[in-house]
Length: 525
Image (tube, rainbow, N blue to C red; front, side, top):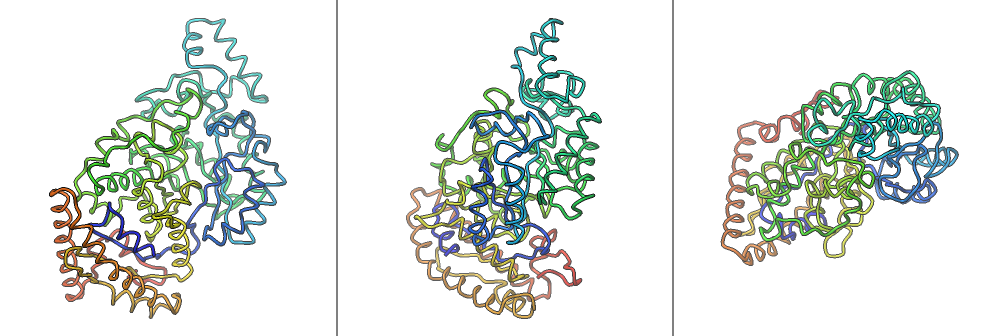
């Protein structure tokens, strides 16, 4: 059903790459349900459904005491890390963790250790720079609002806007000129350690570190050491909201944690728009915009230098899109991936760079593509779980498909290239994939037949592909489809010849991932 929906999409109909290659290590996470701003009691009531759907983890919104209100950013405005309050109690968290553990679901907590809640506007702090009396009044607010912390537990006020969001000033600056930026004092680290210990006592076994690119690497290592001392196999990942790969290397990969793969999300969005109808290449402004920032005016926009403008990410040629799909530029094999997350849904600035109109079919395609990849940890935004084509639950089907492939321990990969003009299906690796599945003792007995069923569905749907090709409204669109078909035949010929020569075509296509050794020392097929 998923392959049929992929083929009948008006956007990527020119070429289909269906990847059935879940060749992951069994002890890593697979698919996370983001219980964004959900109360713990509501999550508890949904544990059975999440398990049946195929999720193996659930991520909670920040659990510390925060400011009141129902704004999406309110949970990211901490008041005290010594209390579990706002979404539920410590007892409810313990009950949720026990319920999830019995069903093989990991509970992930979102920790906000970079800053505390806003106590004054940026304008107030800027004016106070020239008024000792006004500055003393604002510092007194820090002393009184966050006890036992006081002004000495914060970095001195430093405005952080524009380029400072991504340069060296990002580490000690105040976000948007308003977030009181915590210093790694003994008192601060002691409170943070206690918060982590409380979460682990309740049964939390995964952690997302909010705003990690604004925290010094030495402090991040302290958090990781604290967690690993108690839960050695905990899943830990850092939010690095940037397109700068060097920043990811510096602030996540070098300390042994995974990261939010914003570069991959942007690359797939670019591919989706490049492969779609030219008339729909520009966002139409629909969709949930939410607030423009993490508080009414409390977050500066990410640097356009890091994400590029919305226009330029949508004007790439189709050949670039195909290249991205054939070799996705992921940061690392266990990076946390998404078509959309809460920032790109709620934050208007990020919508301009990385968003999609509400229920956009291109967004559905990116979700399906991510869920079909053999690696990565997919974080599913709750609203998007219900996205689909023609009133079908496409994303939910993709989640179940991913879970099924994981259970089978499938090691095979099938690449399908379709010529929409001649109704020809090129199957350069289909036979090899079936053989690999049959000889792998970890695979279920029906894995090969499932592959054949998918192939049959695609062949049956080829006629509609042909209709789509004929119905292209512009000569340029028809030419692109024809060019993609020629490229598909050439690729099929190359892979078939490589197979005949005794080479592994998968290694030629994507050596960084497909030729990776397995635990038993054999090459992944």
